[in-house]
Image (tube, rainbow, N blue to C red; front, side, top):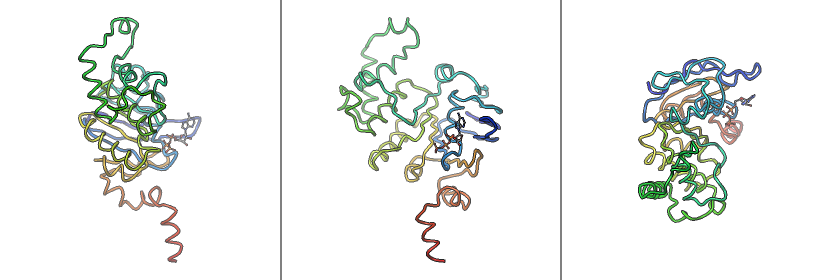
Length: 254
Ligand SMILES: Nc1ncnc2c1ncn2[C@@H]1O[C@H](COP(=O)(O)OP(=O)(O)OP(=O)(O)O)[C@@H](O)[C@H]1O
């Protein structure tokens, strides 16, 4: 198994946000994690990316335990990239320059001094611009982009860093249906060689991208399987998928 979470638990002053979670993710897989608000989804991403240290358990990447390592180390040494829920770009730089900063990976003063905008850099950045549908917006400042386009810029910045594993926390939140669909296609095509972990709520989007879905509830795994399996699972429907509409319909039919 490529990435293996083993018996992960997080105790926030007596509150178990994540409790004894074990799951395995294959290399190149796109795994979606769903569940009600407060289920512990973001906390799991926080542990994989080093923001939160598990109270117990292991996170094995190719058999190496990375649980509790610093986020800087996890991103730079172990190649795990993250897209946060909110936009995280440099406002005074153009789309192209934002991607360039991400690609150059100025992790030391020496790299910053020796960096040159070579032909190879330009070719790669143009390729990323096309992959994230922002070729025409390359010289724009991020504030002139739509919400969805800003999210794509961030996905591009992660691609520029070329991580092996990409974690995306609600990438489609606030997007139009068209932007959401394009984001799904982007994950399927551009990120097909990456291992991708996505936290999401939009079930159409999940259906579009997921091979395996893990359902969390109150810090524990409730179900795991294909989209079809989990969306027909009675417990998953009861705790998560049941909408106010279906409850009203049931109440009316009684
Ligand atoms: N630093 C913290 N200290 C205390 N409690 C926390 C902390 N971080 C998260 N929690 C709590 O842990 C639980 C799980 O939070 P988490 O953000 O992982 O849920 P989630 O499944 O991502 O929810 P959402 O869908 O709303 O983003 C929540 O009840 C949250 O309030």
